[in-house]
Image (cartoon, rainbow, N blue to C red; front, side, top):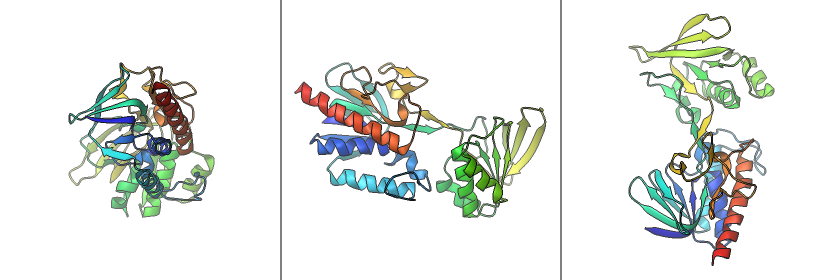
Length: 304
């Protein structure tokens, strides 16, 4: 069993921001992270809305954050899933699927979100959720991108920049919600086509490794079959809150908090993309984390 003043669950930009404030407050703190510190920001090829950096790769930005956290002496624990928690007592307890136990006087939940999976079941193996990770394998090939939001268009532009021959964006709604300037840029390049009011019906794996995709126009009912080398799926994200079900107040899977990032359980705070909120950006996650860490410090001081 490991004991800290503060345990931060999640090592994304939100969790690392909270860790910086915890360290500066001289709290013993650790971050529990099951994947790679930085979360989904790592797979953002270009961040252009972060003050102090006109343009920076997401992984580079997160590496700078991790470097600062480690220099401040915060422990980053690479663990299996946090399987369950017990927030009933003054000492908060967290249990991992590998049998480890952590206790703390306060907890900040900053588990973020994960990509929603492809909406159909398929044996086709070339389905991806990260163009930075997997896009280079499709140079000179054709791919389908599911989702016409900002992520879908941004990642499509990135893919064509890598040398992908053609990207077909498929959007289920009548209009795409990506920024108009991004849509204009995508359409102007000649390598990206867009189909709206179009749903993915099925994907079948072909003997040569490619996929046969059945699409349906929801306005006319017309169906179309298309072969593709790969599929990239960007249809939103869902919150990572399964371990907290039954412990915290959730709305559609997101954690309810007040303006001070308090969950309603004394000593338990939540921040970032995992909470009920309107805007989810790197900078808003950092703001949430700042509040949560300051409130956690205040709570811990009062408990001594």
